[in-house]
Image (cartoon, rainbow, N blue to C red; front, top):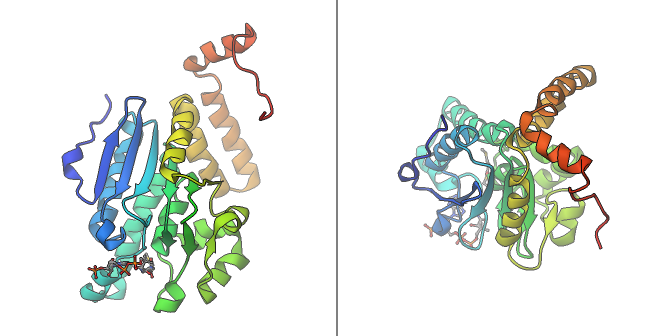
Length: 268
Ligand code: 1HE
């Protein structure tokens, strides 16, 4: 039985379900530039824990207003005057949310505009695909604020851009935008128009794959990166054994065999 997602439980996220199984999840505190307070993180944990068992076929992750996300809620952090242990637990909740995203098996496409900074970049890098518009810019201002990353940037942003660029971003506050942001790996798509519209197109495309294939793509690849090459090759064989023999794939294979399926062609 599929889980039900109770939309009334969400206040900092706006949820919208489309008929094709694509859900739009929007950070909905534009007056605070979608800064991540603890309530928002808890809602992300809740949604992305449920999504893989609730028939969600793909997600567009968006931010309301002119900015995707300004990172950690610095005002809440200041007001709470947290102890080291308190903040460690905050960071562990961030990891819970972002790991559910990266390893959950549901494709997530981030639609980016304006600031994608600090924890906002950590959030975006837990998505599987990033689409930026011409206003989007990426930075890790933690160093300038007397802080350090705590939401997985050392792992995920480093994976995207490499160690040297990550350290440069943190030491100098360097901002990447435009074509350069794509070239260094921060986004895979840059569009002149709306990043949301393009992210929806990309998410809909992914949603047409069989859910078990998407589960493997959006879970196994990340798990395998954490393994030795030997273990990853073994795990890949096991996952392929399950996915590549799924009954739902037979119709697609039959269509290839009888020549009714589309062929892979270069872009015209
Ligand atoms: C915020 C936050 C926030 C805005 N926490 N409230 N992140 C940063 O260092 C980014 C901090 N924010 C900014 O640099 C700018 O706000 C923006 C470039 C994102 C947007 O600028 P702007 O001119 O459109 O907005 P603003 O006037 O700066 O802010 C508008 C409101 O949003 C204002 O609140 P108001 O009640 O005074 O109207 C701001 O206080 C609020 N706001 N950003 C809280 N981040 C797990 S560790 C992760 C470490 C980090 O993420 S460090 C944070 C890095």
